[in-house]
Length: 204
Image (cartoon, rainbow, N blue to C red; front, top):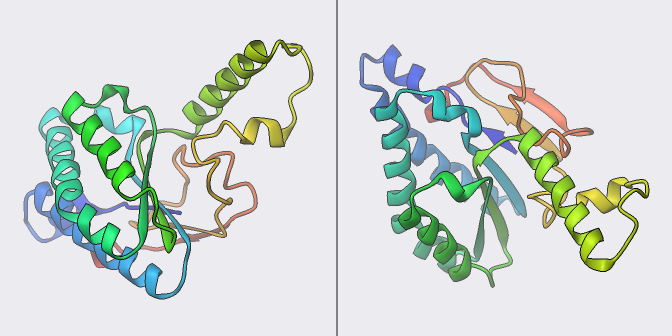
C-alpha cells in the first residue's frame, strides 16, 4: 500500500508548475506497477486521491480528475494484456458521471485478470471506509432478519470494507517525507510494516 506524496513539491523544487509533478507522478505509477508485477506482488493499493484532496485549489482538483481519466483511457488495455485486475475504491459518487462510467468499464474489462490486483483509492478515507462498512453490515443484518443489536465481530465487519477482496498489506510506503498515514486504510494497517522516505513520488 503506497501513499503517492510529493508531486507538487517535486515540481516546485524544479520551478515547474504543479501540473508537471502530477504528470510525472503518473509515470512513476506505471513504473512501480510494472516492477511489482515482475516481482510477483499480487496486491498493490495506491492512495491517489483522498477525501481531503477536495480542499485543494479547484484548478488542481480539475487537473487530477483529467489525469485520472486520461490514465484510464491509456492504461486499461495494457493492464488487460498484462493480466492485471483494476479495482477503484472510495466514494465515487462525487465524480462526474463520465468518470464514474470509465471506472466501472475499466473494472469490468479487467475483472478476469489474476496476475495482480491494482487498487486505486480515489475519494477514499479510512474513517469513511469503516463508517460505510458499518452501515452495510447493519443493512445486511436487517435484510436477513438478524439481531441488529448483536455484537459485531472483526471478521463480520471486514467483509464489508472497501478492500474486503484483498489481504491486509504487508508493507506501507509513504514518499515525500511526511511520517503519517493520513486516514489511509486505518483498519487494514493495524499490523503492517511502515516505511517512510524523503524521496518525492515522481523520483521513487
